[in-house]
Image 1 (spheres, rainbow over the protein chains, first blue to last red):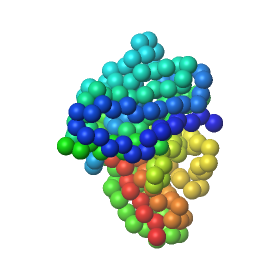
Image 2 (tube, rainbow over the protein chains, first blue to last red):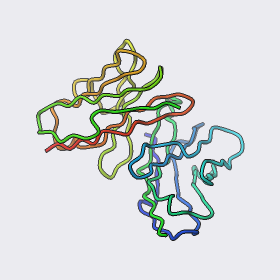
Image 3 (cartoon, rainbow over the protein chains, first blue to last red):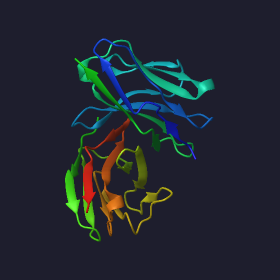
Image 4 (cartoon, chains in turn orange, yellow):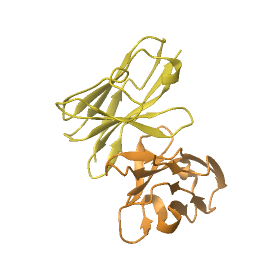
Length: 114
Length: 111
């Protein structure tokens, strides 16, 4: 079965530090990739997505992710985090049997200290 | 974008009882989904709620345990039946527009 692995369950950073959250998926075929974010007390919302084309994808709030097909990875990055980036981050991939079913990783809780 | 509301936002229930969760969208959408997020785990798709026909369930989820209704293009309900403590989770409704939008979730605790 398809799976998505997020290696870091909890990350604590100071403001202005750089961020990289790892995401690996198990399916080797064509997939669509997503990063979602859930800020405290808010809905899950889309941060960025990759369907095709340039493997470096830019999202909202200065986030970017790089799709590396050979590594089955889609890591999320931000050069300088802010306190307001404190949230839980989920990587997701579309199911191989459907382009609209999402398979999620277990999430990474990011705490940014001011 | 789609604005999704869920009721109730949270509930504490006794084992053996059932709870129905409502999902309302502010616009008509073709595809609606129900997800479960168990404590410390990722979101798992329960089923796709189909308007006018039975829901399509994912492996490991059955209609008797999680009956779903979808009477129109803006509303769906998920019932968690004969609950046990293992059903304690956050249940989320989502809809597919130009991206997938998620509701705020219903936090269920079963004692």
